[in-house]
Every structure is written in structure tokens, then in C-alpha cells.
Length: 341
Image (cartoon, rainbow, N blue to C red):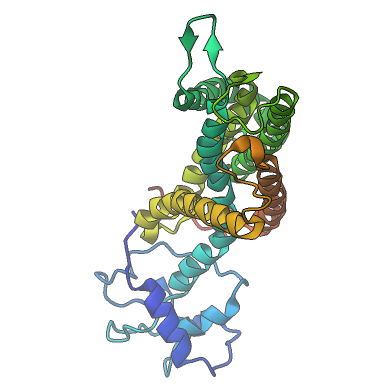
């Protein structure tokens, strides 16, 4: 069972600073680890022993024994001394940072689709038949529809095929699911840019550029692809993120896993607002991308900007995913039995 140790980051940091001039010993028994904790009630004693990794080896200094010989236990008074497993827990969190950071972009795209796409809808023909008018805000229903469509397709089609060809017990790993979600969000921005170009072309051909009160004679259903791509992407990214953080967070930090996941949502919306502010400042009032009258703006350029940023973000994500080693693989490779939650 995982044990929450609030002092692990502090202990690893302080321990590393206190022995920062020490050389890393080659003998593993000169490091303090779970087996060396003398008092059974010590939270460090209750942790799962983790395999030693070569990443961020400078952090290992926080677990160097001082004045003790191999095989001797240390007393609880050595509060500042972290175990190698403590150090490995901190390393785990650090290696998750690139994945955490590159998933923020998905929620930035999500925020834009829920705002500017609705603004686009207000200028378009929203009639179904002669009398029924679709409220602009209700277009987010396509988010729900795409998720409801994607989940069964994933379970019934994608998972069996992935199990067969990729030999993964879950079909797709959490990182693969997140990656698919990021690709779909990029396609959403490209589709949004093309749709906006089409909408502006129709508006100009009908002389409606300077008359925002008039409806542009183009069906609002042209916006469906961007809603569909983001909604499908959410089905992959949301579940992939949640699974990744819950699985990969050290057992002593499980309460932090949900916080890491939710922080990507909030930072995504924050970055969305920041990006809009920057674009307003840079493009100015003479040739604005995000004008109050969308027919006079260049919203498509903003969507292309998000497309480019998303492509760059996918590149960074792939580097982080390639570098990342799943906790389960590391533990099993060392022959250590993985504790169940």
C-alpha cells in the first residue's frame, strides 16, 4: 500500500545539498535504502523498494551514508537522509514533467474551440429546416457526440487490433493514447482554419464583410469537423492522462497524481488566454487577427498559429515519450515484485 511522505522532496533536496561535494560511491551498500531503516513505523520503511536508475544521478548524493559501514542500520534521527527509493520517487516525478508539460497544449486547443468556434457559429446559418434555429452554444453537443462515438469504436475496433499487432495488453499504452489525442487536436485546428477561410470567402462574395449583423449564408455544420476532432481527441487524451498519472506517480504520491492531471487543464486554459492577449498586442488594431467583427479579422491565421504550435508540441512530446520508461518495466526488469494499489 502506498504511503504519503510529504517530506520526500525536502529530504532529497536537503540531503543532496549537505553532501554536494561528496563523490558518488560505486558500492550500492554505501547508500541508505529502505532495508536500512531501523524503525518499522518510519514512513520510509513502509515504502516499496525501487530499482536504481542512472538518470539524474546527482540526486543520489542525498542517500549517501555518512560515517556508517555497509550493513549498518541508521536511526530515525537522521531525518534529513533520504533512501535510494526516496530519490527514485523524485526522479520518477521529474521524468514525468516533459509528458505533463506537452499535454497542456491539448487543453489550449480545447479552450479555443469552445470559444472562437461558438463565435463563428453566431455568424453562420444555424437553421434546421425552416423554423428551428440552433443556439450557438449548443454546438458543444458535438463534443459529447464525438466522445460517445469514439469510446465504443476504441473498445470494439482499435483495442482488438492494437492488441493483435502491438502486443500490448491494453491495446494502446497511456502515452500512445495521449499522442493520438494530440494529433487529433492538431487536425482540429487545421480543419478550423480551412473552415474559417471558407466562411470568409462566402462573406466577401456576398458583401457582408462590414455587416456583422447579417448571417453569412454557409451552414453551421461546417464547424462539425473541428468539434469532432477535439471531442475524439479528448476521449483519448483525458483517459490517457488520467491512466498515466495514476499509474506512474510513485505510490507515496498517489494523491498528487490527480493534481498533476488537473493542472494541465487549468494551465491549458490559462495559456489560451495568454495567447489571445499576445496575438491582440502583436497584430494591433490596423490588421487584427481577432477582430470584434470576425468578417474583418483573420481568425484563420490564429488557427494556423495553433496548428504550428501543436505540431511543434507533438515533436517535443515524442521526444519525452521516447525517453520515458514505464515504472512497471523498470521494476520488473530488476526482478522486484510490483506492489498493487
